[in-house]
Image (cartoon, rainbow, N blue to C red; front, top):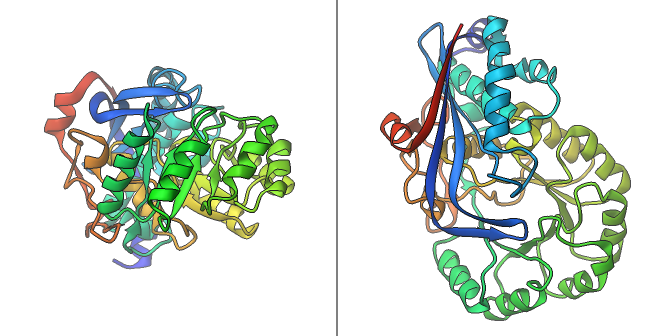
Length: 381
């Protein structure tokens, strides 16, 4: 397909949109400093175009206040009352600029990410190209890293690290919180002295904990992710000046404006770009450009999401500007089942290969969506 044909066909028109709220059990509970979950509660967005193409998106906030103020309930409300009516009223939309329309509405990043990714999926299938190419990348094997939660005993943590390292994951991230930091990190580093290791605090510390971070500085970590509160940019800059280990911004890098503040204050050297947190694929691309221009390293994070959003994240991660392994992992790492076919898998060397074909190369199983649905609502233009 030529560039000209893409340009002439890049507008799509949504004929209908269906919301599917689904709930899938996790392999085991996932615990971080903010709480614990045992199932994945997400919203799948099914967009049918006037041409009969079906695109899928996913709005994937955690339940309750696990990660942010956005919840499945708030995302459903934003989608049904504001965002979907705006899409249907817009008629033809340009997928590459749909994010500009979404900026008319404040907040609701997860809902926006779900709807926009559905538009991108419908667009990529309409023009018959892989999503990564439309996002400015070439398909390549994506290096994958594993994220491991908090456990009651260090022995449990060591067993998980050994298990996932044997599966090939290229780096290990462990969650920390006050009272669960030096001991587990020291134990992992002693047992696995060569493993690429990072820690994620999920904003659970303050600058008063600087002495603890200086201890962590001795373990040869890849990075320390989100040590302080999301708006503590000045304090993060102070902490970064005191450490050799790079700080990685996660919750702090929630928008282009917040990223600009982090850059100005030199509050991080690495940025975790999460499509859900920043409001969609287009916003994520803009943040990647801004971060790389400022000399920051980047990688693609996850909530984690189900296969729909995870597959789209892999296509974004194909961009050469992402230099660290993604947090997107095999479907079987998280879920008893997933809603896509084939499931996401890693090879023995820790890479995920993108399937050939238009869109993401993965298909959504309608049978599984129906099996795990707890609510459905349809909107027609």
